[in-house]
Length: 312
Image (cartoon, rainbow, N blue to C red; front, side, top):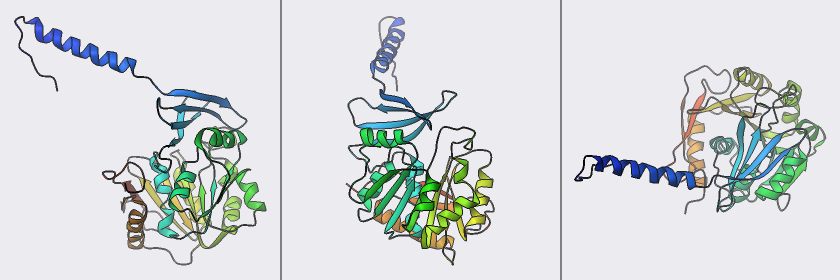
């Protein structure tokens, strides 16, 4: 807050304010912006990688044909398990439904933020990752320290083709596949062949009993239809809307018995205890069909930590 400072001339306070404002503007002008480390285009995507000056905090951007830049991943390699983008935190509502998974699959790699989190917080988990774009696989390796090794197996393949030939069974499958929007995708870049009843059938075939699949649904005009299609294909489905964001995280399950809202809330509290990742869950107030009687709004309380990290 600026305070008026007495001066012998009426111009004194004004000159002081102008000088202060100039100093502030000069400081802002001199502050360096993100460093562009890579700009590259493949058959699937056009991307950019930036890094905050003096740090190892990198961001992977998807650049659309109209020039719009969308953050795909943001990872600080000094604390790689700190999930910087809110939706990625809520993908791990999976642990409310399958608290002790043995094997998981991620469809869509990006910068590998979810891989870093799972390696740090569930190191015994066997994790397979499928990414259709070899350029993205190379970027994740070079700039984000994500590659095959230990319990992690990264493969370059189409998600549907992989599921058709895979022999492994999974407790959890995370769907986070996005490309440059085109005639073969929806408006958000999700490949259309990963939104069909046939694809959902392949997903179910690769899930263990009581297995789950978690969908990241970005906002677009047909998002409610996407949710209805998922519900038609799975025995139980649960829609979580992030507060202040029109997208949804949808958890679909092959379990015979649905979970109640109270059971999910109790399980979410256990995630808080395990990952230091606080949830607040409350009704969204609109009918949701099978599963929960209405969607649930999921919000993260952030006074104790930024993102999800281990307690310090």
